[in-house]
Image 1: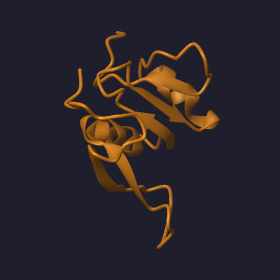
Image 2: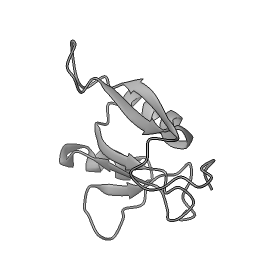
Image 3: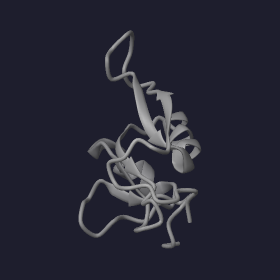
Length: 100
């Protein structure tokens, strides 16, 4: 479960601004909004040199997901992440998902 209460999908009501280490310099994409309840998990993955491209905590409406670049799918598998059945590069977030 995450900390979201009445937060809709696509909302910016419960995000934390983080500096994405994969965008050098002053790129407009360097600061990204990550759902607060999975921000630590995203930072951990970045520390493991895994590039995320999208994420959502699920807002207590569905399981949280993290999508990564295709080249990092192997790393996610090695860390024990479970793939979402729909997309090859999308995994269930460990922090907030019911899927273990």
